[in-house]
Structure formats: C-alpha cells, structure tokens
Amino acid sequence: MSKIFITGAAGCIGSNLTKRLSEDSDNDIKILLQGNTWHPFLNNLNLDIHYGDIRNKQQVLKAMHGCDEVYQVAGVVSYNKIDDIDVYSTHVDGVRNILEAAKEIGVKKVVVTASTAGIGIPIKK
Image (cartoon, rainbow, N blue to C red; front, side, top):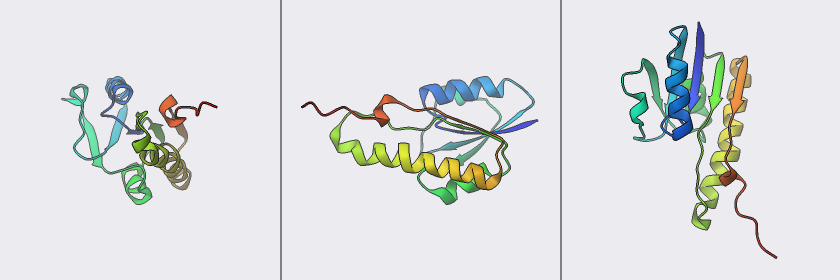
C-alpha cells in the first residue's frame, strides 16, 4: 500500500490526479486543502483531508506525516501584479516547505508541478 500526500487537490490538475490515484485501492491518500476549497471530482472519494497552507511548514509536516509519496500540485495562477507576493511565497517558499518536510519525514518519491505563473510576465525593455 502506498501512502500518498497531494497538495492542490481542489485545482484542475490536482483533482484529476487525486481521482486517478484513488482508483487504485492499494493507495491511501491524504490531501492538503487551503481554506474552504473543494472540487466535485473529490466527492465520494476515500480521502484523509487536512486543511492548511503549504507556506506553513508545521501544517505541511503534520499533514504529510506517514506518507511515502508526495505530489506537490498546489499553486497560484495569476498574472496580476498585485498577486506577485502570493505567487512567489506559494511557488518558492511553499514548495521549499514541501521538499524540506518530505526530506525530514523520509518520503521516497516527490513529484513537483509548476506553472508559468510562477515565472511571471517578463518586463519589456
């Protein structure tokens, strides 16, 4: 049995991944959701649901505990300048927390996804 931890399960990619991985009855799946986010694809799935933020390492460690696979899918997609800090803190600090927590726990497999939104819009010269 694989114990799988998925972030961003309420998003488009994350919900599809969660649904697919939960189809294998040998998988025990934990998800980390931010706030009151949800996706209909998660309905009726056998999930261990944790609420928190990947930018909070203690919340990540608590939710990830006992897992041997991690899929980091959480992200912020925005091209608005006002969201720059949120995009950076999620895609850099949050992913760092996921990787550090996985290392501390001894996770065997980590998959990280990213978005071009994490890069931002180039400044024209």
